[in-house]
Image (cartoon, rainbow, N blue to C red; front, top):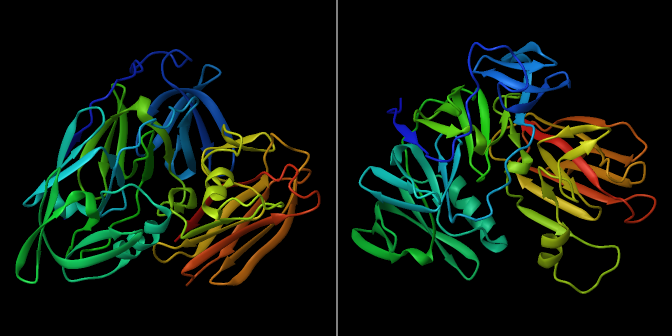
Length: 410
């Protein structure tokens, strides 16, 4: 359906494991593998393909088939990129590429990265391109433009925090301007005023669920149809068709479970509100930035950890926090493991409430003395999910709630 293109991202390459050698800790990168039934394996990665993972555990080769895999991640994941590239490119298959620059001419686009490398791909592979950095006021408007249906390309403009858009034809994008045809005329809009671009595509057949979602240190998320580790690089074929090779040293996580699932830590909430126990007069935006939820990390840093089990995905949330998510499609269930973070256990006492379109589906008190609490809720037909964490006994003392593997599934 889509033309396949080879996308190469040249970065520093970690040493590749030698094939055919005895399985031991020196033959491959150290990884953590979590299975669907909750077991955690740590060892040296020997082989990684779309079908299975093979690792060395205590000098013994252990094979985990894809059907039993939940996640695979480096034992010491690379740190998130210190720089913040200004362009977010969303492909038609749901993949997200983070780039430092974006230009387009005709039916082709060029993505530039902070490494200095550039890749080319067809605009028919691209859904939307956000040119300006995220902004709490503009995020909602941009999300609405992305989700809207129109018989043409869309040009979104940010004005004093709000986002509006026009429907026409995107003719080209340079470093300085966007050329847009509207109502029979061609306009050259300064790029600094353009929130983003959305490309029109005729209806196409629905893509299959991805085999795996690959997360990178720069914030990119790639939904892949196949993958294989060879020569120190992860060779990927995206659902939309193009292929690329990524050095293993840039990979933070491979998510195999719940194909078609979306982790809430990968979504921008429609709204975030935080109200402290004692009001110090700070603005809600400043409080949300300082005390708001942490994505894929504990409130004090490091991995999410509950009852001596670490999780690579999820949210860490303080009491007096309300998060509202607009669901990006039709989903049937919300799934998570809830518990007080190990760093403060056995202290901690919070009340957790989860609503779908205003209807309460879950309400419970969670303490640092409790076992992790599995959550699985029916959200069929819901458009929004609200998560509310409030004080239990003890006020704001040790109210560090981890919502591990928090995701919505089809």
